[in-house]
Image (cartoon, rainbow over all chains, first blue to last red; front, side, top):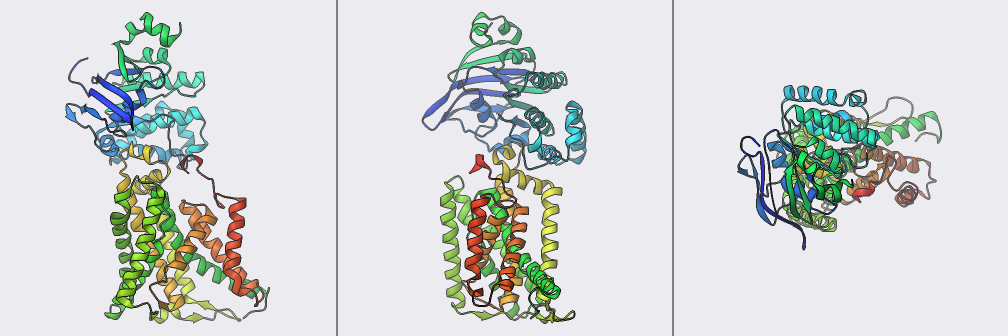
Amino acid sequence: MDGPAVLELRNVEAAYGAIRALHGLSLTLGPGEVVALLGPNGAGKTTTLRVISGLLRPVRGRVLYRGQEITGRPPAAIARLGIIQCPEGRQIFKNLTVWENLILGGYRLRDPVRERRNLERALSLFPMLKERLRHPAGLLSGGQQQMLAIARALMADPEVLLLDEPSLGLAPRVVEEVFEALAQLKAQGLTMLIVEQNAERALELADRAYVLEAGRLVLADAADRLRENPDLIRIYLGR
Amino acid sequence: MQALGSPEFWVQQLINALGLGSQYALMAVGLAMVFGVMRLINFAHGTVMMASAYIGLLLLQQGVPFPFVALGAIAGAAALGVLMERIAYRPVRGAPDVVLLLNSFAVAVLLENVAILLFSPRSRPFPMPAILTQVFHPGGNLFLPSIHLWALGGALLALGGLGLFVTRTRLGLAMRAAAENPTAAQLLGIEIGKVTVLAFAIGSAMAGLAVLFWTAHVGTINPGMGFEPVLKAFVACVIGGFGTIPGAVLGGYLLGALEIALQGLLPSGVVGYRDALVYGILILILLVRPGGVLGYLEAERV
């Protein structure tokens, strides 16, 4: 990791009512880094993203963005800083057209010039969206919706992109396409934190990874070392 | 009166239906917008119309020229809508939907009683300028009340403008996005509070415009006058499909057409039961298409 952290979590504890979901999680994300967050269902991966994007207020601990405390700020304020979450289950606006979804992605920028540039970039990454700009987004297939969700997030020119299960429920060929696009974004220097069930894919993409279990950090290492780690292979990769 | 079933009769029915439907559409659209962003059926919507009518009357009594009376009534409605959101709804955001609903009843009762205290429960005449009340006779036995033209023109302009706003502007798109998926909208930097205030302001302004036509029709205003419009707006929303702007507009015109058709076609002995029939048909629509004519029920958000 070079330079100061873009995003840092310090001893974050989070809960849903009486149910603890995170027990003192600390992690960092450096500039241009791609970090994967792995672990079984219920490990607290999505919760971590929800805490970062402000959807869930942590019980204890701090969230820092470029050294500045953002803990407990409302989600819209955090998004305006450029911390953009591409939520689980895609959550595109189905009644709106593809184009309208994309334009809303750039909501935080208020800048037509950047909007046009981002639109071009997003459409070159996912060309199939170009022919469907006027279609209601709800008519897209699952894979197309996932691509739209990523494209919409890119419209915001994210400083940090938080991806929650980008491959969930997609056909293998589509998963391939999505990860190819993410690899391109990485090559362009985008900082990403990616939650993924598909550990193998995520580790191919990521520089580093954290492994969570029941709300606790159990492993943290470089991605290529983790891929050879016998514990991880046994538990998550099933090889 | 034209002969039943003659071409002239149908033209007359169409004129009446468009005039009435325009009023209902304007009333319903505000209810739909607020429901969209808040999941609240704002029963105080009708009370805003009542208050807006009294604001208009006060201005008129001060000798303000009518165009400014109209603008004042519309602006007053918008301001009241915003105030209502701030005082009665925003503090309980996140509470169960029924709390919001109860608050809307509280606001309605409160405003109505304030109006009774200030203006007495009696109906008061609302003298409208001749330009709104004159009736043209374009030929044959046709009656063309100018209020129908004003209502239709006003609705086309206001609803057309609203349509452009929600499809062409950043804020308008944000409002639709927030209505569909508030979480995803927030994650893009859209402030739900801001679009909610906007929905109240625009929706209430539309109601303020509608009540001018309504009042020109009825001729008088009273503190309880908001009840019927909000009920009509609600029915229009249900018919068209709840919570969407196109649904509210379509529902408004369908309701107008339905009422006029029943009025014109029912034998005179039964006409008195017109509203009962309208609500009967409403129940039938709900049985056949629970989501309304344009409807899809958003299962995940019920």
